[in-house]
Length: 215
Image 1 (cartoon, one colour):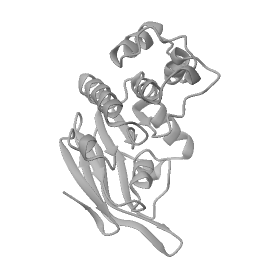
Image 2: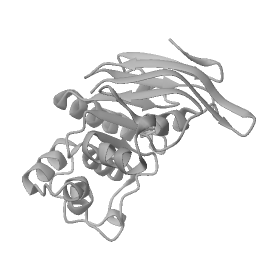
Image 3: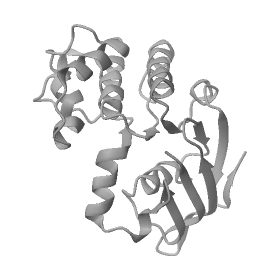
């Protein structure tokens, strides 16, 4: 999936979060976005998914203009073609690991236990499908979130500080799983991070500031 952002700007009242952001992410490309805290990296990621609004510019996914879509149309596009990995995991505590991973497939009416198990194996969680989230470590929970984001084989994966709460060793394992799975499925990936080690895995590293984005 191709992500094209042109001259994007976002404000809160009179305060500018960012402006003049132009970015083109090719299918299969891994781009990391870094920048100072509070510069709007997570907001930009949310705009890419159509989860947040913007004030100027356009966001295009495979030629479709997110800004011209209704909320329902954007939600359907996300459900089918976008995966999102959050720093805070956002797993559902009353569902076991396999059920959490299967959620995107269930929303699409495509239940596939074999695919769920295959992804759990791929991210190093073989045999843990029946455990509840509270029985897992932080690194294991983040790998559940990665498997859930990828199970429906999205064309675009967006990851917001996925290693921010993890120790360096666990962060490395999580990044290994994230990169391996996106590469295998040919997904484009945009990673927002403060971690130089995580950013170093990317094909390109871009720096976001209030004035725009640059290499």
